[in-house]
Image (cartoon, rainbow, N blue to C red; front, side, top):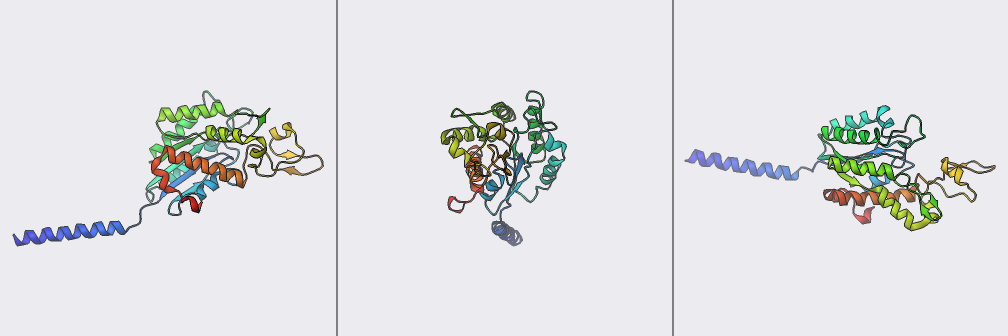
Length: 265
């Protein structure tokens, strides 16, 4: 019986040592990948501000690019980069891929527009399937509202694209961050003047709605202004990135610990 007792004691000691060693090892980090258009991209969207809210122990990469749609992001090979990152996920506990399109999928944008009925839903569902196939966690995000008012009422011409994303998330049974609904309600509540302070540049003293609709504002005898009612500056990025973070915490409760404490944000 002595050899048996010795083996058992040795086995128990080894197990205890393994448990202690595992306890001392740092937990693998979580990774978040952002995929979308200019309203999420660096310098014009909320993506970098969102990444700044993530705990230092985790990783957040903003891969969004201006002018991209659910079709052109893939056609240009940018989705290949995302898939490459997903194939190298062994070092991460989980990889979440936040996907937001719609702005450039709208009609009138050659090389970018997608058909709302036949192409856009297919594109979004395909992104979801491919993230899952590579072991990632897909998260769909409805498009950030534009901030154009008509007689005090905020327009929401992205509603149909938001509806498709909502339906796709429900069909695929994945998390949805309804940024369109949240941002629309918030911007409508604050009104046009306050909403204009969220832009990349201050609102010019003289402007026309036609100029705003075309993007950058050109003033008579002056250089173009970066002001528009689609993209966001530092204030807008901070405002909407918090909204996305809060939505993620609600939709995916386990993600609450991925973000910095309130006093560090």
